[in-house]
Image: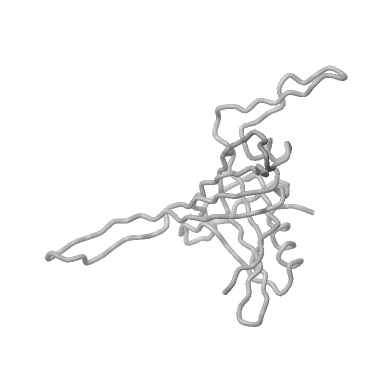
Length: 194
């Protein structure tokens, strides 16, 4: 498999989360123009030794870290993803101010689409993470002799969901499609985007 494209990151606020069923989401939105998605699964590493040898090991997934690079993150997205609010609403003609608070960011569902080559076949894979809590990393540089683009990066902690009656922890679901449009439609449906 050769991954050759990445696009259409969406997020949606979690409105209800009940063990034994998938979370429900409010109206979602697309996040900038997706440049990269780096995923690291965090695993337990518990080993059991007996008779001077390793006899069992638990290396199950406990959480994950999703780092997303986009071309931009607009104000509406920041208000939905972080503890940010309109602050001191101005009178007519005034400047709208915003404040970043110290509370935890809300958990959201999120997903994206990538293109994959499987032999001679081109397929589109959509990922949906049930529960992610994002934080924003900011790095800014002065302009020098050569222009360098500065783009935002957000990092999300992936939480376990219990989306089925067996109450087993699950972190992500995915689906494969023959067309990009079908993959995007699947994600938009999950995120409540019409």
